[in-house]
Length: 232
Image (cartoon, rainbow, N blue to C red; front, side, top):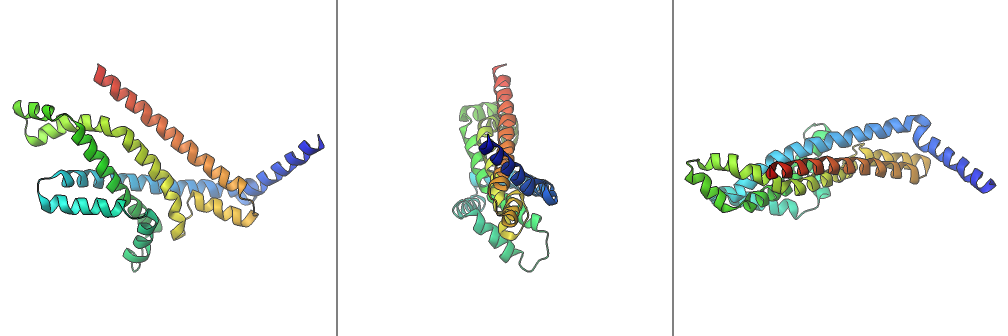
C-alpha cells in the first residue's frame, strides 16, 4: 500500500507541475490552436493548388504539364523541414510576415504536390467509356469533366485524401523549427522547464491521436455515405 500511495503522490505532483502549475494546460491549448490554424491554412492552399496542378499535369499542352510535373517531383523529393526553412530563411528572409502565414504557405505548397497526384489518380481511375458516353450525349469536355468525371473521382480519391489530411496535421509538428509555438513546441518547452518529458509529450501525443482518430471517423462516415449513394 505504501508503494501505491507513494507512486500516486508522485503522479499527482507531476500532473500538477506539468499541466496545472502556471496555467500550462492553457499553453497546450494555445499550441493546439496554432496547430489547427496551420493545418486548415495548409489544407486549403494544398487542395486548391493541388487540383490546378493535377489538371496541368494531365494537360496535352507541354507548357502546362512539364512545369507541373517538375514541381510535383521536386516537392515530393525533398524533406518538408527543408522546404519550411527555405521559405522562412530564404523566400521570406527580407519580408516581415507572420510566421503562421509562412508556415501555412510552406505546408500548403508541400501538400499541393501530394493532392495533385491524389486528384490525378482519381480522375484517371474513371472509366474512359463514361467520358465517351458523356461526349456522345452532347456534353462539352468541361461539362463531361464536371458532371461525370469529377463526382466519381472524388469518391475514388477520398480515402487517400483523408490520409493526406491526417499526415498534414501531424506534419505541422515541425513548425517549431521556425520558433512557432505549436502543440509539439509547447510540450517541448514545458519539458525543458519541468525536466519531465512524460506528461507534456504524452499529453501532446494524446491530443494528436484524438484529432486524427476523429478525422478518420468523420471521413470514413462520409465515404460510406458516398458508397450508399452509388448503390441507390
